[in-house]
Amino acid sequence: MFPRITQYAHQLLQSRIKVGDWVIDATMGNGHDTLFLAQLVGEVGKVYAFDIQTQALHNTNELLETYNLRHRVELFQQSHDRLHFPLSSIAAVVFNLGYLPGSDKTIATMPETTLKAIENSLELLKVGGLVVLTIYWGHEQGQLEKEAVEKYVEGLSYPEYMVLRYQYVNPKNNPPFILAIERRK
Picture 1: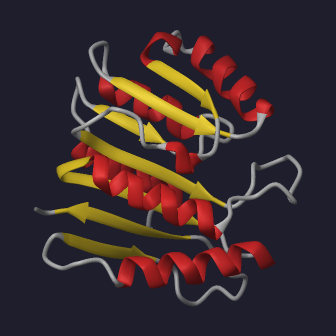
Picture 2 (picture 1 turned 45 degrees about the vertical axis):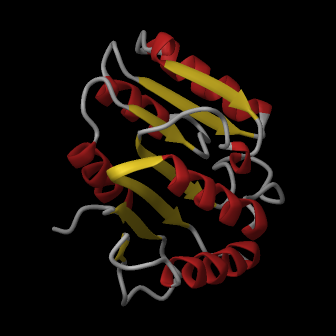
């Protein structure tokens, strides 16, 4: 059986993140990726997690407290396009594009801020690092964002960057898919 989209995203991240790495969750949502990243980086690593919604920070904070991993994570209530702070050598950046599950669907990631966030992420990424984008495009805003992100990654310079697409092709309901960007040089 093929892994679910979220499982595959985690497999990609797990293959690159080592204890002590610095990583970014650009869209923390309910905190599941943030928790996963905090487990991977160990005691000496750090996770920087971003979201604009108070509910996302609350949910993520509670989840991290439950697993006693809150000390490994810095939470920021700000848009993912604000990823230009003084960091270098980021091992991975993860995005789940769309809206916060179980919340107001009118609050969603936007093409303009997402493209800026991806651009900023690539500047922070170390050689061999990954940007993993899970794209949920089963809604109108998601379709626009999907098209903008696809166009952007198709224009990335090869061989500096390699882009992978992982997608189920026969479901009829616009299932989510992954775009993973590896920095090679």
